[in-house]
Image (cartoon, rainbow, N blue to C red; front, side):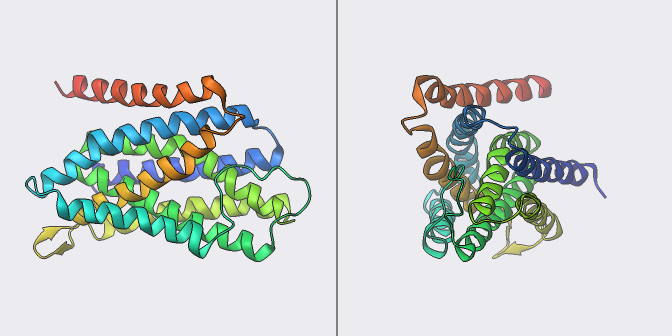
Length: 257
């Protein structure tokens, strides 16, 4: 197996492990709401900067400057997660369900886990396809996704607890989300030589995955940042996430030159 593929798989394992860690932390009550919000805000800023400053320009460049087709795929990715999270799973929301009593029907919790599995699968796809496009883009997308993986595991475990499930079931649901991430990475590597109309798979999957990531950042994470409990410090962490992306990109460029 090529070194690049091994690195991409390692990214997938790290992201999946962060999912499981989030589930363990919420099950054991070791991660406070303030820490979670800081992670969400930092991840949202990093993701938004990566999408608009790296992935979208790269997607358009792949299509020789023609923006319409990649933007249609980006829109498709955004709408796909809208369908999964708020049409198929209308009770889904990102963040912790804080009520002690079982508020979610078990069916709603199960559907919510399914929606997050779709989301996590495309996290893996994003890591895989970005790594195929370039090493730098792969690193940036991996970091962007890793920053929200603990909150993602936190969310799925919280939903299970809110539905009256055991802490063990909550932790296992977070593990399942991690497995979905690994499946996404693995499938991209398996079909990396597959083309559509003589174009590499990355031409289509990169903007599609960008749409998924954009939805997560703008429609899942940012609303959590902008709640009344957030405050100025949490909001500033979004800008810190953007700055972190710039800093990471600068370091990567410096290493290559």
